[in-house]
Length: 318
Image (cartoon, rainbow, N blue to C red; front, side):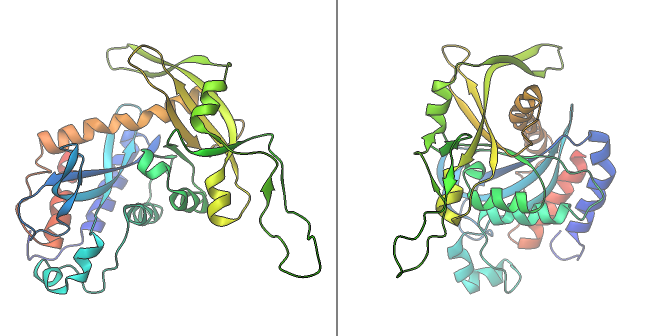
């Protein structure tokens, strides 16, 4: 594990190309996982949010890309998140054998690397799913679109959106001096995802999943064609039209859920609802990877050992 050189990326590729077709690729799911750690010698350890504990703690964070099928799921790749302060401590990086020249990458940039990697593999591609931390990242959504892939990601209820009937025009110059206007301007203010969902009266009850016990899980959904104000603000470009999927409260303990999805305008509402709710299926992955196969039992303090351990646990799971 520590010293014998082997290419964990090549092992992950062979594992994925053999097993993913049997799983049946319906979606690619982004998620990160964290493990509490004592001390500060293991690569990437820092006081940061730990999902396993639900609060900030001293921990490592790994970013994962999974494939979700109709009945099964499996990991496709992992990336270890290295906080920026870590890479500035060259002596500590040398001790844990982080390769020289490794740049700082955000979790979103790690995800883009994982997606770029699997695009070269002999597996089917599918819409990318992710939680709100990924869905609210405009750079990630633009990168996925640039790869000619689709996504369906959770979005915050405060996300600003323009309705489909909003008009955008570049203002005409008002004088002979100064720069001409280049950024299109909308003819109305953006609305939050929450307000759009609250105002909708056309709702449908849809079966979004059938459990292994043949029990139908249903939810009340509405679907809106929108443009993200975030895209216009950050890039100055006219935003693409996409879907806002809203799941409305179905009981006293339910709450609104929102997703942004760039599937075509003629996408079937039932399929959109199923896709939006599919991300939760990978929770079984983590139950098996951690509870049965020892994903969180890594003993070692090197960069290579972390990747090899995650790779071998993934192969055992497959």
